[in-house]
Image (tube, rainbow, N blue to C red; front, side, top):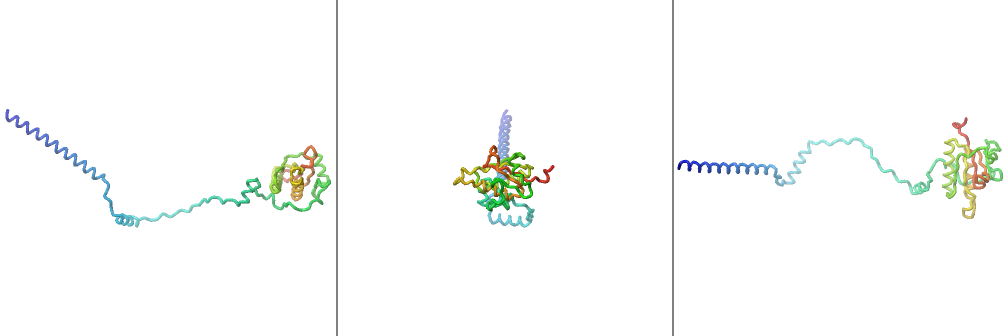
Length: 226
């Protein structure tokens, strides 16, 4: 019986020693794992730079491929910006047409009509009688002289492009102008005379504007002739 008690005590002590050994081994493994993941101690910046230079010796620069540089569009000049804001986009339509010049000798019907030399003499009279029906109309009311000139010449070019032969231009009678002078009335006639595509014009009949409007006959382009 005594021998059995001694043997049991030894077995318990052995088991305890074995558990302690296992705990020490597990602790050692955790410490080793922590050492692997721990950050390296601060190194000397000079050593880091030297190592970087040694590494860069074997690096070759990449050749840059040709590329297009997109620069923002230049801003227009102040005068051009003002013209655009007013709808006065510069155009070839204005080329060769001035505001001045005496045209009284070119007019007929008491200064109310004009017929170009290569048109029939009674063209203006037939215009007023309604031989050609107006296919488009332009109202110049409220425009300054430079605005009205550009608007009229661009309008005529567009009508020519679309094959419109007869148009009505409303310039007003000048009652709203300074000094009640019909500025646009005279200017419109001056511009039309200088436009070679204008064959004739005549003051409109009363039902179509009278002294405040013109009926204009345009030259028929080759593409629109039947």
